[in-house]
Image (tube, rainbow, N blue to C red; front, side):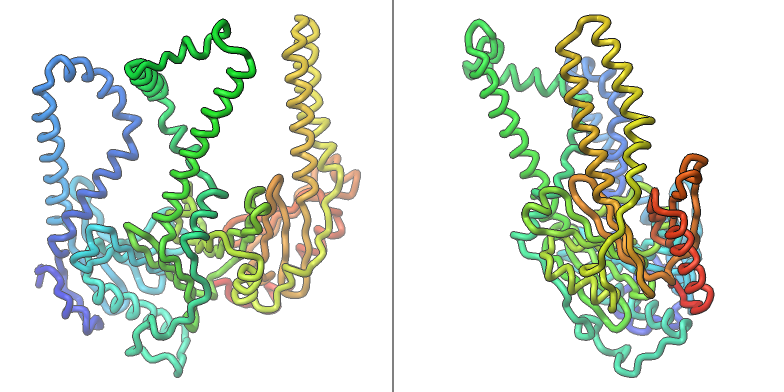
Length: 519
């Protein structure tokens, strides 16, 4: 049994290669980086340990070097052991992996179960031209298999081999596509994103509030450090902000200026994140799949089979609407995927900040014959408003107003009134956005609040339907329709009972009569 590292030439003839192989030593970098990411992700749990030992470390600075040296040694030992225990082999129709330092695992993944093939090239693999090959399966909460260090040529060869095997098993033969032809020459580029587009995406899709939430335990220390620094250079915040020193309008101006500076910094962080993730974005199409490539530091290539595409989502936040930009999502099976965001989820392809014409062309390419751009949506019932106003807003509003009047707290009374009005407006906006439509081939759903999202999916992709109706809804002839796809559920609330039955019956009839595969 050959357990030598896999050379580039070893992948020139993949078929029949059933020997256990070790990774290249470059994989040690990957295991070390993974351990660092795990530590960073669980940093909040390490805060108590740091808090307990902080005083001892400050009293004995000499302890810092041994502690750092010990942590580095443990990290290196873990990476070396992970490399040593990791082996893989390629059978005729599957890939097998043995790995694990403390908990051993043996993965046997048939090619037929593989849904996505993702090639990742972290920055530390760029010089040596290695990649990580991630194999995702339908219905998994995380990747089923990952070969963490393969030569780029070998990774591409294995990818094409797996795709060819899957096409063989599906009975798909395309005489115009040669297995010897490089995959890049078979592709048609559908969309590219420029730096300008990525900057707009970073501005309109600011996600830095996640960083702010993670930094919450350190706010006191950060504010104290900032105040001490400003005082050391002659700026006394307490004196400047004292009501006896400045007028109220000056205080308001200072607060507004500080808020604008903070928002600018957060926006810059968001723009930087957008460029890091989507730099060099290209969306290409082969004869049977979409391929997305992007990434500044870590380059990623995600492949999605066209037949697995479940739904396209046209998303616009309020700022996207002002700038005339759209984020288009192409989603396939998301079963079991929990907490995956747009940056890490390989079960969807996000095309960031496209214009209206670009979006229309992409949707038409994904689902030819759809009428999303021209269809007229039917609004849901106004009783949606009554439900939220009477069951939620009115009881809470009455209670808070009663408390404020009883205690003669008139300032709080005004705040409650203003907040109630704002909430009522948001609920109205939510009702105004809801809409649905369907034709012989597709179902269309519209929803949102300040922004608006459009969903379009073929009827034959529906896997389950749900008819929901409360006692009060039944008296008014209303119902809620829920359609379940492999990518998740889509709900249409407070529509007429007749429309709900028609939508469900049409969907089930088409699925049963045509028997088209959702895969």
